[in-house]
Length: 483
RNA sequence: CGGGGCGUAGCGCAGUUGGCAGCGCGCACGCUUUGGGAGCGUGAGGUCGCCGGUUCAAAUCCGGCCGCCCCGACCA
Image (cartoon, rainbow, N blue to C red):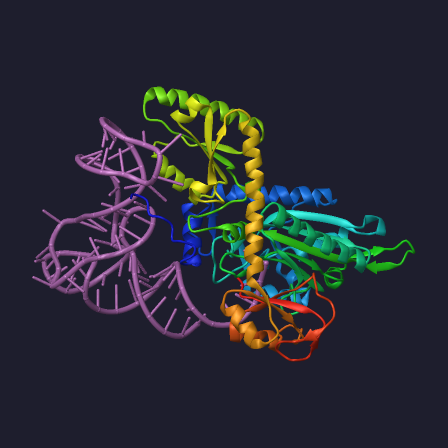
């Protein structure tokens, strides 16, 4: 055995993740602490995410723009909570062109401030509203503990920034974008995320309300995979974003912001992986079908290669992302290699298949012999397309079943602890202190390691008794250990 | 910032009486292989983190410095 197998996910998720990211060629170590190089195979997953989201943003009237990487330090300070929230993790440039700068420039950790400043200049009248802008950019947050994709000092994301005339319009926008994230996560990334609202303690620094989509990873941990904020009038006040109403009265705008990052790549890896490696949903997989020619003699090789190139051309013409693996490795090696890299469908074509006008299709979501079957070369494009659809649906179904089996309703703290200890998510009535620095949330975190992930938008209604305080609660919260 | 560990080939590591710089994987070439991780042979590849000291001789001993990783407070 030349190549070592990857550490099984069932044995050590953390080790599995670190190995698979590099072995599958998604990322490479970088010379800079806390950063990674995103390699083509990982970047193409990001491109699929970007395309899926960008299409949705455009369809809802947003336009892309680009704002500077550098933000005057004073901008950050204009919104009190905002600067307090971000200052520990800022990278600041103090020297430019060999000279000390008059005012230090912050490398953006997010762009509310510089975009807010721009908005204040662009918006004059109610006719300028709503203003719906998105930018694709990199941001820097000086994190101490980093992991490829899940948390890095620099990461790629999109950040949407909008301004509206009323609170209700801003709130509608905030929830609309949350829906878009959830729709993308569920229908393209095949991750059955839960939409919810963040507690005061967990919300974005400077926001009125923060919403989240939470995904469950294969080890039961929660991962915040996208966020949408109703910023109220906090940034409008700080940056003087005002408009003249139809009645010729000066009014403050209501703004929103929403972001989804390369963390989603990590989410896809951790939500679907198995012992053998990645399992990529077809809609975001860089390679949807890998074709493996198999032969011994030169005569066989000619016949096999001609069949392979003909089928490859057909699949390509049908818009299916394919790759023909012509490496001089053994078939057995290639099977394992592509399974490790999560390609949804593998097609084998050997001398026997050529003789029978067949091909072998193997699906990544069902390992071993059970996932393998013979298909005719006639109409193979449709067979492949159907199989890709099936794999996509099955990965979602699998992740959903996994999630549902690990979410438990609890009514006492003892039950709560048991659920968290078993790597599950606890759903319970909650009347704990809902403020920044909440002592109740801190206590739960200290006792169990779990944090309040969100108040799910989907609420049971009515009221119940809080599992921690015993007080009457009118909403349930979801708790879990998180990345 | 407090506690623990590590810097030797692209990656993972071994290297204790101080005495020619090693192993596995990967890489290159050749032959045999090829439907579930092939075998043999030949080869390329090194400022042993850096600076100084001890010594005939330092990866190894001593001093200093630098960097990285792991564990405790924040975060998409």
